[in-house]
Length: 214
Ligand code: DX5
Ligand code: ZN
Image (cartoon, rainbow, N blue to C red):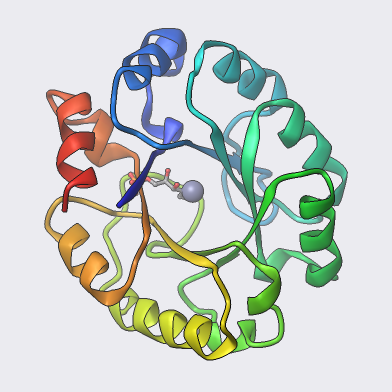
């Protein structure tokens, strides 16, 4: 299982400490939640903070852009250490163009879908994406309750990927914990984001290890 702990749940007053803690863990990425206060009812942090995170991190960054019109910010993500950039299906006017733009700058292109968005809508772009990010909570906040419908959505996405002969992976974001992780894996998930479950645990490094080996 690919694990991407969400920095949103870190202690922002001790970011260097928390990022260095994750350097010594089995995490594959750091998940970076960018919120604009328009697409989602919250504002997280911007690119100067991402660059500071990247400076201290030995992990590649997995950007989740919860912003309207991501195109002007793709290069900023790349400069701040992005390996994956995911944009929302609901926030991109010309999604296909945005996904090509992400690939052109040498990053993996992800499409994120809200809980209310059917994965059937991804049929025409599934061959163009490297990652499908399924939101298992409504985007905007950490620490929310996992939406149970996600398991079925993972299976539906897996079918779509197989039918298209696509090599896209499935990333799950929101309310992930050690209880739902094995079920998500069984349904076909490849990558898990976990914020509060990791950072609120007594031993984040060990919690990541547990999630990694589900
Ligand atoms: C929510 C963010 C998530 C969040 C996950 O809008 O996209 O990445 O940080 O946090 P937890 O794991 O606490 O639900
Ligand atoms: Zn996220």
